[in-house]
Amino acid sequence: MTLEPGEFERLRSLHDRLDMREVEDIYLPLSRLLSIYVDATHRLYQAQRQFLGIRDRKVPYIIGVAGSVAVGKSTAARVLRRYWPAGRRGPRSIW
Image (cartoon, rainbow, N blue to C red):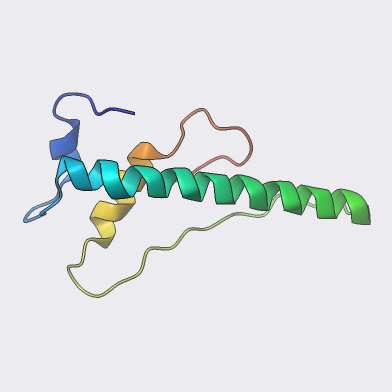
């Protein structure tokens, strides 16, 4: 996955030390791993409900980003949002 011209600058915030290599080496694989985990959790949830004969509504899957002041939480969330698979099956993502 690549970024469009100027998109990298929009991902950064004031005084960010984010560089493209960090995005490619850390955030892209992390977004893929999170996507795999969310899909697996969704499939398990569906299988359990089907096995138990439960017909309830879908539940949200929430991913939290925590840390101290000025450590890059907002930047991490922006980059992960950018790389979250847009056409993915299953749960819908809302940011």
